[in-house]
Length: 229
Ligand SMILES: C[S@@+](CC[C@H](N)C(=O)[O-])C[C@H]1O[C@@H](n2cnc3c(N)ncnc32)[C@H](O)[C@@H]1O
Image (cartoon, rainbow, N blue to C red; front, top):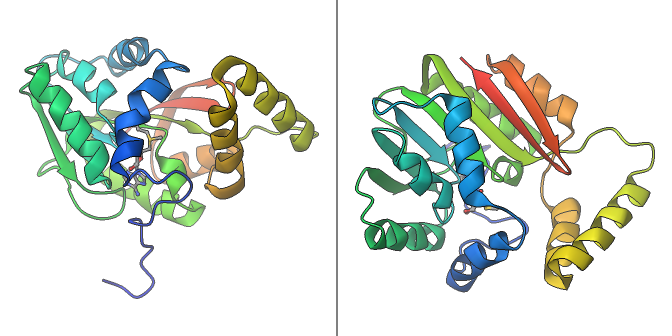
């Protein structure tokens, strides 16, 4: 390995390598997200058919990947956390979803599909890398996508604000009310310690990596980018 290579195995912020954290993840997300509806929206945005292979990177506990598997030929799911993958694997077995393959691997190292895929999905994971390494990851994902293939990226990015502290204080206050103290603390930790970037930097990185941004949607701190190679 090159001596300058970023070590993506070190979890910044939440420690997803921890099995207790992995086991508690779905219940925590259910308080904030409708993951089944998200997967429907992603499946439609990608215009998936039963012929297509999808690679989801930072697949976590696999809820989205398992739903996408019902819409396509095969889902490849990768993540750096064996704990998160073990939860996803158990759900695949329980639900008898057989067209999903889960592998250890990150944005920068480890598992890669053997041939370019039609679609790549990544949600709430790219912010684990500092910006230069996000760009390297995006260049790598571009290379793994078939020409005309689609990339759906959803992550926390920051829009331009005149007063970030006031904006964050309001957001954390709302979260405390709606999702409780733990979620409010996790979001503060995200802003403080993880590597979420600015939306205009993310757009610059996507386009410079070669992607064409077809659509963009903001929901609070989260932004989705539907891109094409
Ligand atoms: C917040 S969870 C998101 C999981 C899932 N995508 C979702 O939407 O619920 C972040 C996931 O990214 C994974 N992750 C962190 N760094 C990564 C990297 N460098 N490459 C791939 N996955 C990574 C974590 O292990 C964790 O499973």
